[in-house]
Length: 195
Image 1 (spheres, one colour):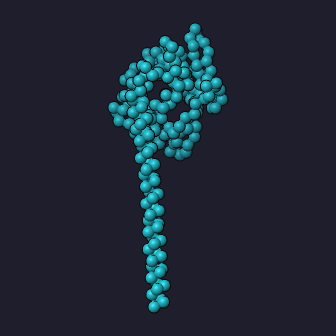
Image 2 (cartoon, rainbow, N blue to C red):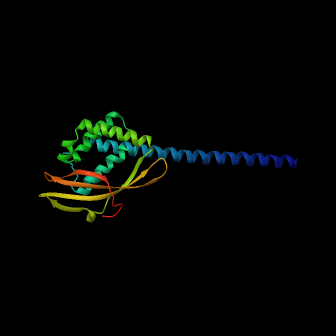
Image 3 (tube, rainbow, N blue to C red):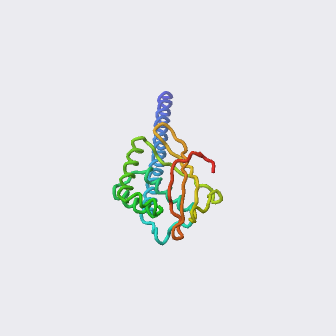
């Protein structure tokens, strides 16, 4: 009788242990799925916010704000899956941030084609734009060139690649047109963190 009792207790213990493990696994799976759904919702919210942003009446005020919005677009372009309609809308929106000189050299269709090509290329390379760090307002350099107000700054961008992660430094040059700061050019910086 004692043997049956011990055997019954060990079977009960095993059943309870298995149930506890199953509950723990279920709970972690639930948290993981919830986190994934929240991330997806944040991405959709950002996509909608950028697609619907009123660039005419709510244009960014400072050079830093313009670059921040540009980085937000790029994080969506190179950080999530987009439809052709999404790309078309976002490309139209981001062009509001660009200087007339830049727009004159790049038609809307050419920019969209280039954007699609770059997204496909970076996707194949498993490149993902994770986040960005803007300089402090005091680190944004403003100056005059040929009678125009100009600004420059460097942004640190965290990326993931198929092999590892790291940082890329992008240098931005802006020009003031009709009281609005516009991006004239941007590209990878040789300065790597220094202003």
